[in-house]
Amino acid sequence: MTLLENHPEKNIIRAQLRQNVLLKDLSESDRAELEAHLVIVDGNKGDFLLHQGVREMEQYFILDGILKRVVSNPEGKEMILRFADEHDMETSYAALRLGTPTPYGIVCVTKARVASLPLKEWITFLNRHPETKELFEYLVMKGMSEIMAHTITLHLLDAPGRVHRFMRKHPELEDRIPSKELASYLNLSAETLSRLRKRGKI
Image (cartoon, rainbow, N blue to C red; front, side, top):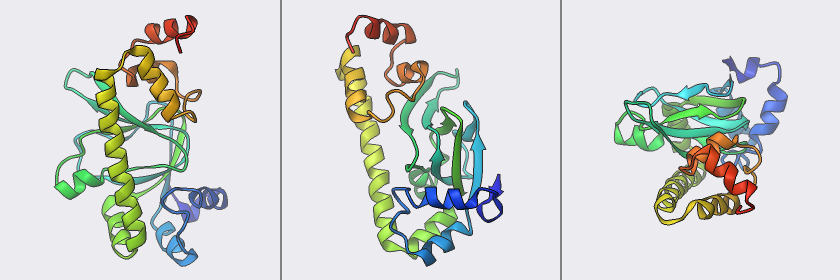
């Protein structure tokens, strides 16, 4: 974990931040204000950036790699709620606003790099930048809506239908997510996913 300002690749990272869906329209002064708070975190496949049930929350801007949002029960059974890749973000904003522990974890699906800051600092920044706040809240609600639609899909569509829907909605991720992770997201076994591919069903 290194402050952006002290990072040896800070110029590359600043260019990546300019491509983030939330940050691309910031003015140079607003960008400099935010960047002063950012730390850069590198994670390996399987590393947790955020653990389910904690109250110390961060705002993440994804620079490289893929993250997943997951919920687990006490027995360790896991459900993947969503994937997010470069130019996207991850957050626990709703939990912070509701005063609850975060209801999910955020895990690296692949080797990943993120820029992060404490969520309370991000909210303070947003309160000074209403246009960015409006976009952020829209993206939070959009993400929650997509998770709800995905959950409904698991009950209403058969296995090929679930895979086809994912490929239609997320073509940019299709070849980047390990089969085991994709199968878990779609509530399939890895064997079933492989069998569907071999039979040309997907």
